[in-house]
Image (cartoon, rainbow, N blue to C red; front, side):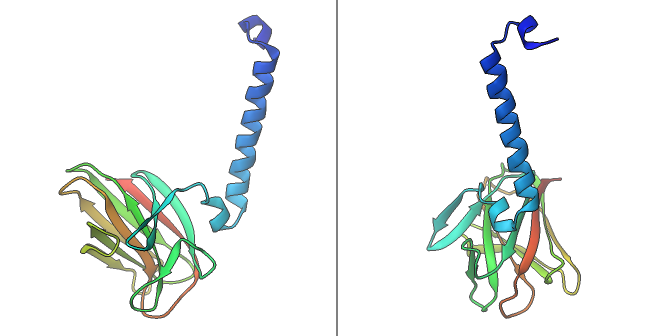
Length: 165
């Protein structure tokens, strides 16, 4: 069936095709580009002077610990980290997983503020994957600090998945 048979104007079809082409181009750019460029569409906010990246339950995110990534911050122990936030409803089960081939991942799950009460932590030790499983006792937001294990500023790419159980 073609557009004329469906009664759709040619200009509508051209706009739809152009939009689809732009979408494919953006996806290709996201897959091929550096982490800072690919995740540029994620919103950030500032809480207590700290940049916080906003994500959602059921998301696959990627970023880079690096002084050139404005979304990261130097943490109290001298390491570099990125603070993420997501909302959940009471009783929601979730898993937060951080993976990197460039450094040993470390996660800290917090409530109330980016550096609020620590609810859980996961140190990958010498592995490439750190995971925290949890069930929300109250509605979000929850905060995750994604960083490297050990003191000192380490740089490199990583992924952060926040999934329902």
